[in-house]
Length: 325
Image (cartoon, rainbow, N blue to C red; front, side, top):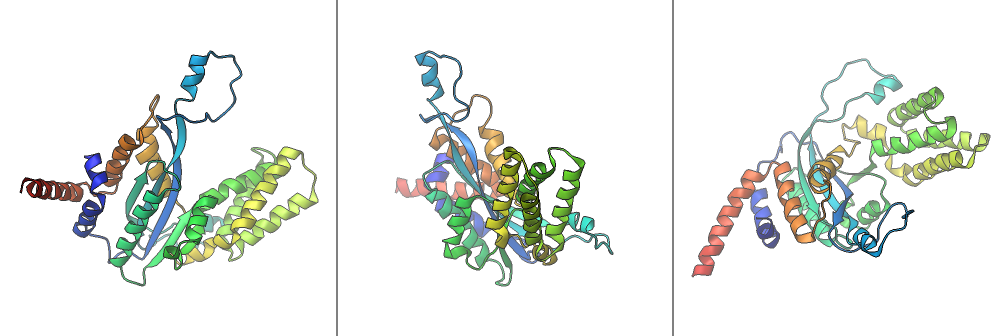
């Protein structure tokens, strides 16, 4: 089944898209998120991680390099509706941090095994995006929502497809860096660090210039005090990340417009479609067999199995009929 899908993917998935119903009336925004996840391949490669500390014989060393980890890719096109009603009268910084995002209505997943520069993945996700937007009203907001990976943003910035997308860095990824900054300034697990972290979280959500305010606070602590080298590196790393991505951290504007700010759907796809199935103990994958698994799991997790099965039966039947005549 997976090999048949790989050979006839364009025709089968186009039939699936035609047959399925999209939540057109309820959709106010469409968010595209991309991410990579390591998969262990049954092909030779360099071993990652700590160097070997104990002497090993030649046979054991060859087993270590008989497989390698490379990045598979996952992409999700998510449909978002209105923001669910919350409690009125909440205007504090703390309330801003707890404010609810828009309701996610549906999502379609694309997943590919590792390949150099991911041409097949890019083609597949771009086809999914174009097909989706053709079926939605032109005023639907288009959003690109990724983590801070440079390669992902370089790909998007150089692609005209995303020129009219609202672009934002995943909020929770930013908070990971803010947490590292708090650890560098105040020490790991300190009460002062937790207070500062929560304040910066609320600042990002409550102010138009929230990212600039966080940067100024980091600069104040970095320049006003002395730190040991490891702490200085944590603060400097957070500050560099914030400076490099400040133009894509308009979280208050996104929340005010009822747009998503978290890339949870693609994080979930990496976990549930790739990691959960393909990274169990002792597993090593070939590209062809792994792709068969990923393609079918993506269809199931996108709630497209019935439409795909019907398209497959019709396509296989017509193919056999053509071959027989």
